[in-house]
Image 1 (cartoon, protein in one colour):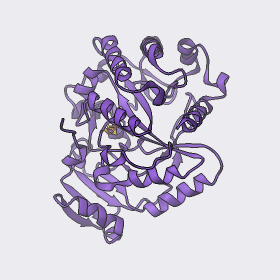
Image 2: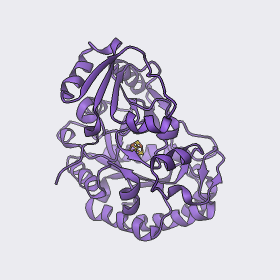
Image 3: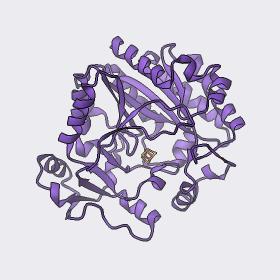
Image 4: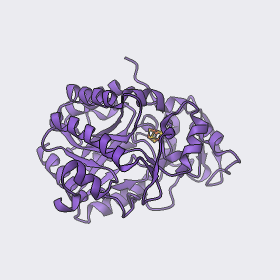
Length: 371
Ligand code: SF4
């Protein structure tokens, strides 16, 4: 079986002149021997008139630069919906894969793939967070995909080794890629959760360009579980489409046919939601997409969402199917949903269980103790 490598599409590496002689930059460039390399001096490339065109071209250009802000920040959630209290480690932005629903198309100002090479600063912040004595769930898969560029950057090996020695930090690597070979034998100390996004096969095939096939994602998860890694899965975005029940039932059944249920720490569900500017950008870049043809309401966070009755129908189906086979200790939760939906589908609100962040902290702590 040939495993796809999303970094293969990169044609050029642009190196910020200020970091070009740094050992880590040189290490990445040595792995990118077949790609064109250009040294650039401005911190950000000038944006041109066409964001859509640039965003497509930008996925072929990787920019190596230093990050000037904080690496570690709370997930940019809104107060109106139940948030999971996750922390985002900003290793870079954009992704060589290309999903029609990807929020980054409307969110990022710069079209290029960006990776931050000042990892001394990144690890200094992580050390500081680790000394706080408070459990933090930290992920790198918010502004980029956690595995997509790892063949070039090899950052995950360093992160996994670092987290293995941390008492209060848990790392989640979230991906639609499957290049895990180099991570399998690492001493992870049970502190890294390997996570994959899953979707109905029809959505994965039509709307997720250059991502690994679902079966490869499940196979990669199984290999990681065999090496003692904890796992997580994200059904996000859950998308309405013809025969959606059959599609989601199929992937849920395949998940539990393939992956050991007791290794799964959490599973999230999030029905499609998006900032209004995303729809015209995505329609232009993906003329075949049908995702935005449904009717949407304006959510309290300014994002478009399906009507509540539709969200309830989707969630009730998925939750019932997942609960038939998942381990009783796995935390099943909604990403950014209202108390009403929680009560209607789960029969309780997160506040009644101490809050969603606490539910996930407890799931993480339980799972780490098991390893
Ligand atoms: S894999 Fe994730 S980050 Fe990459 S394009 Fe798809 S949704 Fe965006």
